[in-house]
Image 1 (spheres, rainbow, N blue to C red):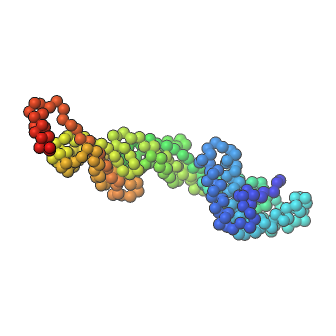
Image 2 (image 1 turned 180 degrees about the vertical axis):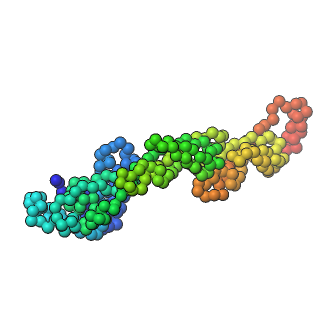
Image 3 (image 1 turned 30 degrees about the vertical axis):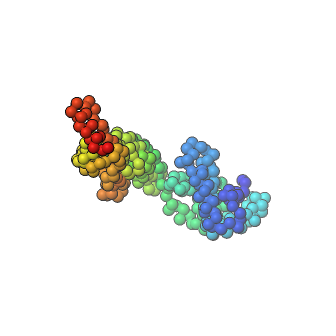
Length: 307
């Protein structure tokens, strides 16, 4: 069995502070995280390895015993354990302890390495009692799922039925779910093998825009055409919103391309009841066509007045 150099695993010096170890671990964990390396067994093993190293080096007592173990490794390896006070590391009175499983950061189960289990106890840490280990329960498996949601359903909120691991689950979605949002449905995942808590479902939202609006986070954008006379003289104009038709006031002498901000008529802000983004209306002036002779004459008179 090879000696595991946890300092080398994390890429830090033996004199590294707890803060340095924490920063290095977070950086490596982000790089080798299973969510970013789906199906990559090498990344999965690397992630377990750095997690194990962090378990030891981030704890003062575990790190002290690990450092002490390092200086006695050859003695133990060559003697097969004989004549070496192994109990100071395992806290179990010597001998090679049995195997067990570790709780990973997602609640799933996965073994520590042989090295860790041999020298730090059967699934526990130095000094942990058998009673303490027997009380540890593993969480059930987490599942991932995706749903496609129309923008109008996201606006109003909706409910849907998921089929995960053979079971149907009703999910209520608050207004304002966004594209790519990941929701956690607690306790609806797989069952634990040893009576522990059930796993979770992580639900990814995919928004399908079934409207004419453009989405910018919680704001909405849309163009609307207004006739020349309303643009020049001002007046009322009806627009479509996700709440339904709404009449707005157009200021007189409104230029083509002007953008009006309608506060609170955008998308709901998820988890914040009564809070909304804004709706931005871009006004597009529509010039009259097929002018009658009289209309043409009147425009000529107007043009003459502007000279």
